[in-house]
Amino acid sequence: SPPHSAEPEKPPAVSNGDLRLGGKGKKLRKPRTIYSSVQLQALNQRFQQTQYLALPERAELAAQLGLTQTQVKIWFQNKRSKYKKIMKQG
Image (cartoon, rainbow, N blue to C red; front, side):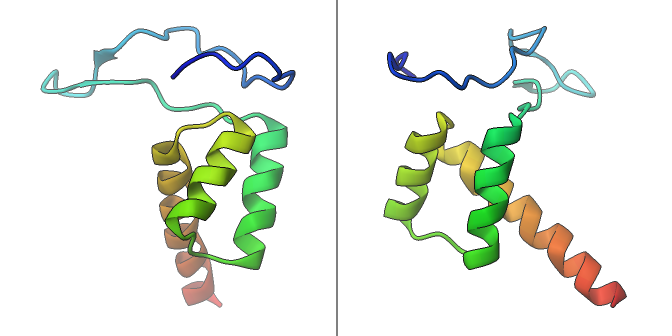
């Protein structure tokens, strides 16, 4: 993604930013994203309002936080499954 000029809050750099072999050496994949506390705060806040984002909402949130839409989408997916698991336990 193109670098943004007016963006003070950057997520911490991932030591191994290169694509690496995941698990069994089948597929090249990126290391897991490390979200900054600011990003997590915004994501969690948004999740409390709504568990599902419409495409424009996702695009806007991603842009605000300096994340890709894929990262936001997957974060919400993971959060929903985690939330459901907790709800099941009561």
